Amino acid sequence: MATPIIQAEGLTKAFGSNEVLRSVDLELATGERVALIGPSGSGKSTLLNCLGGLERVDGGSLIFDGLEMQEMGGDALAALRRERLSSIFQFFHLLPTLTAEENVAFPLRLLDLSSEERDQRVEDLMDKVQLTPRKHALPEQLSGGEQQRVAIARALAIRPKLILADEPTGNLDSVTGAAILELIESLTEAYQTGLVLVTHSLEATRICHRTLRMRDGVILEEGV
Ligand SMILES: Nc1ncnc2c1ncn2[C@@H]1O[C@H](COP(=O)(O)OP(=O)(O)O)[C@@H](O)[C@H]1O
Ligand SMILES: [Mg+2]
Image: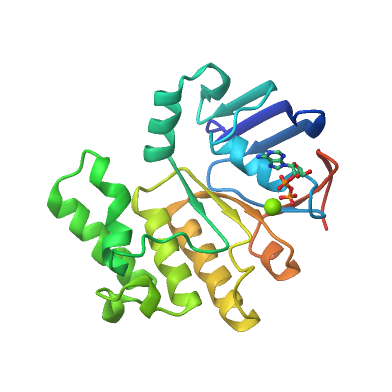
């Protein structure tokens, strides 16, 4: 079997006396999509931040793509985030002064790619998210759904092993949200990109292979 993208065992994380992750186990295969549901405050975003190397866990083992993240320094973690994983957020987080296509190209500027390869990826992704006619628009000129499509293209530009998505449809109406989910599903499938999708929406769990439920800092059970 191929190396799992994530192998997490016994992850713990506290903020002061608040034990937010109490013992989290999680394994994700290459190209696997997992939904993470659970009440507000149960630790979903904190887990995502730890998986993405934005927060450090206090204990346990967290192996991403064969690398023990606990043993990595800040530079190595930053490189891992730059080269192998991407995030999608509820509020899009596009750079407001850059056009749609410049936002998609932005994460590629630090990768060792030819300018032809860069341009080709951006053009191809703008087409896949159906925004070629809007490629010169600024984020403020785009609807919420269009902004999230830019964010999806940007997330995929580096060809990450894993995308971490925190409530990506939380700020969209249900029709737009459904279209965004379909796009996330089809593109992560096409590129065999792993996905951890934090969501409140049962609709969103349908694009995933598995659904995990979190409560009080542990993953309770499989299935909705
Ligand atoms: N940076 C932080 N500093 C202190 N406490 C935090 C921080 N981030 C999250 N928490 C606390 O951790 C708990 C879990 O939060 P979070 O991971 O955001 O849950 P969820 O995403 O499931 O709603 C909450 O009690 C929250 O207040
Ligand atoms: Mg959250």
